[in-house]
Length: 365
Ligand SMILES: *Cc1c(COP(=O)(O)O)cnc(C)c1O
View 1 (cartoon, rainbow, N blue to C red):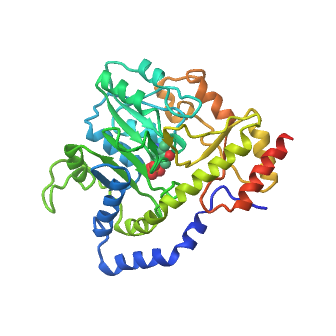
View 2: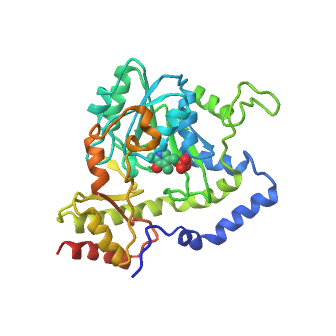
View 3: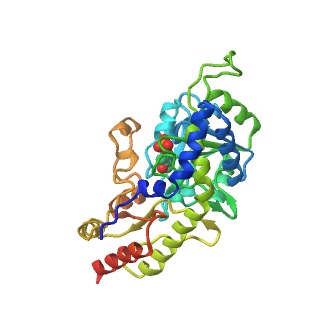
């Protein structure tokens, strides 16, 4: 059996007629920028995350970057973020003029609040709370730290659309929540896309202008800014997918539970929801000392796996100037050698899932 790590074509095959009809309407309407489909999408995205506002932008990185601009990040300001995330959780800080400061994570891949607090200096302006793998970061602890030190929280929910923490959706805790609609994410555009959520009226007002050249209206520019909008055509596609998202998420969660039930007695760490959270399993990452051998075994058996991410951000060539070295973030560094992402997309069949589980069990027996 051949099981690819992800199958983006398959998802679209199942709902192709609906998507084509929706995109066709946009083509005929001639409304390509900031149109009705986008407004509709933003409204349903805001509802899903229990926030006042959602704003479509060009991608998840821009969502982070524009959020940092919105909180007034200045040259030299520090932002605490996770070294094990996708690199955009750090690069957005740099391109916004700030300095990323890393704090190590815990076994569940999310920021360790104690390490975050240790990283705070007089220059710290914000914490980027990454909900990595689709599991909510420890928001009670992080919010308390932010409050105590008068910092903003920017949520990086790129992998966590629809996840909840103590029954409250992510994206509504921080000053803003940032989401990616990249084709590999749980809610995927047919290309790049992103969303910013917020409950703050003035931040929202700033962002509506900031994503659109600084234009207050058609002709008047209030400040120099960027062109970072979500296309109406992408929104038309996403509006179709929004109807299926809850179902897809439930399948991811059901697969995660099955993986946990079948694999947790093997010599590996297997993710599992805490009772107060609902993770959306963008990835399902096991941790094992035999990672490379297991990856090879699965590849031989036709099961494709990935590593998210093999090179921590502080090891990247681009990060040289930040002055970190090996040993600075032991949990992240150890995990980079033991993590393995196994397939978890909603289109997997029961048969495929059983095969993956069986082959992992075979490896150990
Ligand atoms: C994907 C991702 C981003 C960046 O989103 P893009 O839409 O690709 O720009 C940022 N942070 C995390 C955690 C991500 O997974």
